[in-house]
Image 1: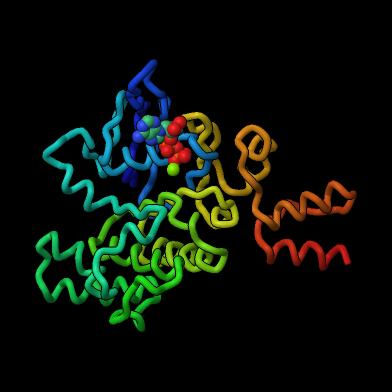
Image 2: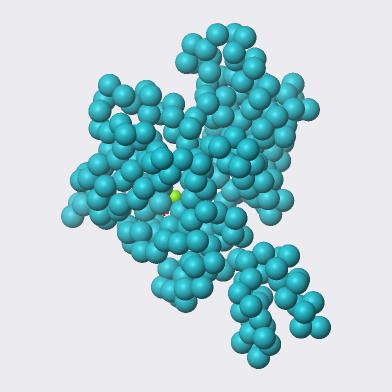
Length: 277
Ligand code: ADP
Ligand code: MG
């Protein structure tokens, strides 16, 4: 089932001087229910602009965006669309509202007028989903970046979105924080069936995706499984992305004349090296 559809979508930013800036150019994309899609691309390639069109924060200059079949340009449906498509942003500090974790998570459903009993259930569920049950009475401000970002995700989950978009939500985190967040969103996708669109330029976070779409200068220039996308030489040259660390090491060994298969994960790399030895 298709949950998100972009039809020939373009977005221009008006500028004070000169021509409009063409940030997104004629992008068509279909996302199916339960998919884990990674959207990758260098800085300025148009990822955030595209993401904001996916939940109606901005409307396309040309083309159409449909969320569960509803046109995002239909102003009477804006509220429904925002509720169905939850967004997590880069800086967790800008997404914290309350000084106590459980209040912070309850804020979204409270605003929607969800009954008290149901809010309690949702807060419990969301805390568990991000592995932060033990911290419900703590203050988020002193936590690590990874923990704060998990609280931010829980806050969005409490609104019960069908689609979760993370716009570089891991880019300010250290490797441990990135791993924590990646594990959480992978589990939400696999166990809760939430459709995930993860925007990142860390390809280590993309190895488990169902599909990777690569943006370059406002266009989606390549799409495929991680193995397909990582096999393209254009990825590192033209599109300025790095391979996953394990793939990079394997490629290096191959260049030195060792017989190496294509690998994506540290486990596959270890296995390949062991076989060589
Ligand atoms: P990404 O998220 O991939 O880094 P963006 O969607 O943020 O890319 O930006 C795409 C292009 O649009 C860039 O050239 C950027 O400078 C420009 N841009 C982004 N936001 C604005 C804005 N509010 N006003 C004008 N230009 C913008
Ligand atoms: Mg961005």
